[in-house]
Image (cartoon, rainbow, N blue to C red; front, side, top):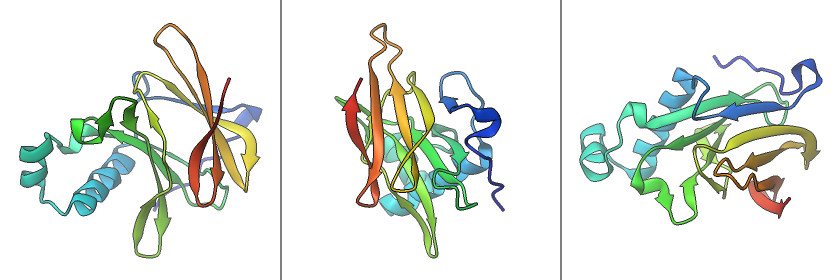
Length: 153
């Protein structure tokens, strides 16, 4: 059972740092199993094809819409989910038949993922801050059933 953690605990935004923070083992396992199902591969096949192993999945749990059920914010450290713009940032939402990815976002794992107090359509906005020296900030909002880039700060 996933325990909901309030995003706004202590009146602050929640920051997730894939490079420094300890990821959630259970959420990472859920992501790994989601990837196996999405690709229709066994663990042996996906390791051979894309080098993906259980430890390749890095995930955190956050209740983005405050419904008491955590979403999973995650990425897979593999070239299968990496392109010229960065890695796919998964946001998995629990459904009656499993999980659904509600993200169109890409990011670099060294970026800070910040869950903001401001909401759009009942979901917390997400800000990503680059750590490659330029500190460019991007904001994603929930629209039409998906998190999408809204603007660059």
